[in-house]
Image (cartoon, rainbow, N blue to C red; front, top):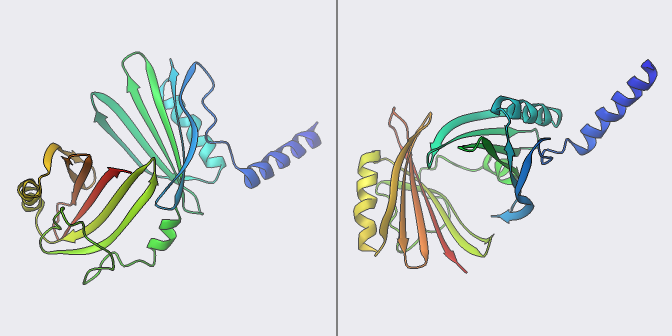
Length: 247
């Protein structure tokens, strides 16, 4: 019996090492699939995602279930946060393995005693690339600016790219480092975007270890999100511009 148990353990160990635990296998219980497992590309990065809802289960139990599953698959948790979104409490957990693959889990509480679970796995080749990328340049990195979205004053462009692989949408993403304060930057965009016929639609501040101030604008069939990431010991702020239009 001991020999059989030992052989079973060895087979299971090597199966997990070779094929990994199925992180997309839903929790056993009363569940409802919202989105089946899908794969798509975003800026050349392969992303897997699924979403389902589980009923009458404690969040701690769900967390333990996925912590164990991801640990077996060689992932370590590196970030956890909790925030309120549209009246619901959302927990985010992020894990990474030695291949720089990321798994993000989002647990959303709903009033009817259920938890919505979103699982996202990212084969992030950009992480390997970013180790050799200059995120603290003294002058603009190669790239482009968007004509009708002003770049922040006293800024250096860190990176820019165009993505056309995301659900029939074309996205621009430009990231700058600016030496203006967060208040000056938010005033700058709220005033300047009007000159380019953009209409402000939403703005709110969220608090994490570093603060992020979000602003969204709309112009005909285009949407623009501008985020200002700042820290209390102000030296410089990161401004990210995301602009999307349907193809």
